Structure formats: C-alpha cells, structure tokens
Length: 200
Image (cartoon, rainbow, N blue to C red; front, side, top):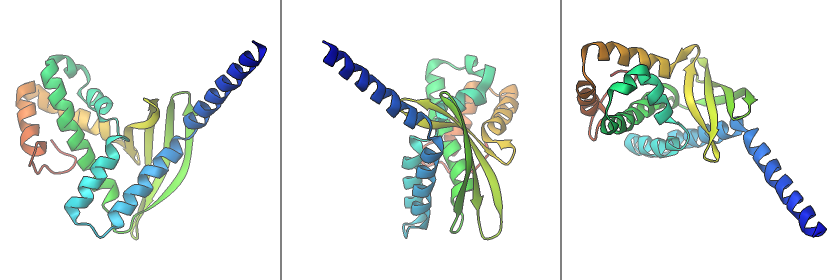
C-alpha cells in the first residue's frame, strides 16, 4: 500500500511539475507562433496561400471569441444566440485580418522577445517587431485555457486592438441594429468578402 501511495504521490507531483512548466511559458508559446508565422511569410507561397496558412496557425493562438465578447461589451445582450454565433465567426475573420496585416506581412520581419509576467492563469508577454525601417512594442495579454496559452488581447505600443474595435462597434450600434451590423460585417468579412483591415 505504501508503495502505491508513494507512487501516486510521485505521479501527482509529476503532473503538478508538468503543469507548472506549461503555465510558466507563455513567452515560449508566443515565440513558437511568431517564428512559424515568419516562416510562412518568408516562404515562396502566394499571398493567398500565406494568408490561409497564417489563419490556420492563429486559430489556436488568438481567443477571438473572448475578444469579440469584450468588444461588444453590454451590447452582447442585444444579440440573439444565433446572432452571437455569427458575430463571433465574423469577428474572428476581422481580427485575424487586422493582426496579420498590421503585424505579420512585413518584408523580412524580425521578432524580439522582451519578457513575460505570469500571474496564475494570466500572463503578459512583451515582444518587438523589427523591420528595416522601424520597430515597435507588441504586448500580448494571455490566459491559460484548454491546455494552452491563448492571447485575449494585443496591444501595439499603447493601442489595444480589442478596445479599438469596441469603440467602432459602440458607434455603429448607436445607429444600427444587431441585424444591420451583421449584414455590414457579412458583406466585408463573410465568405468572399474583401473588407479592409482594422475597420467595420
């Protein structure tokens, strides 16, 4: 019995240790995603192939559902369950396009990893994007969920992308219904849409 108990304790400690390692490395998770993004950007693929590859990569890294709910704020309650689902799908496309266009589609981008702060299941990772002409700070607010670190907001210098979308959505929803907003987003960001970055 004692052998089993010792073995069980050892196993439990091993699980805790493994979890501790995972929880302490949001920076490594960010580095893994950004370096793979750079590999895709530097590849000989076509522009559309690069966008598709980046979209697949980012799907598991950006928690766009959390960002979308935060961006809607109190207006979330005005949307029906079906409208909420459609909004989150369209917002995912909008946010990914914005992130890719603003941060990844540079010529030969380089990334520097400045540091991280971890507080339980929350973390902040600071990075820099360096191009031949400029460099700027990019901060990832992250959370540990479903066995991985996910970004819940991204700040470029002091500009929060989620807060930027929240301001836009608040202005639009003062004049439009949820159905009108979804129609607007569908035209721009639905299948075949060609919406520009950072705008609704």
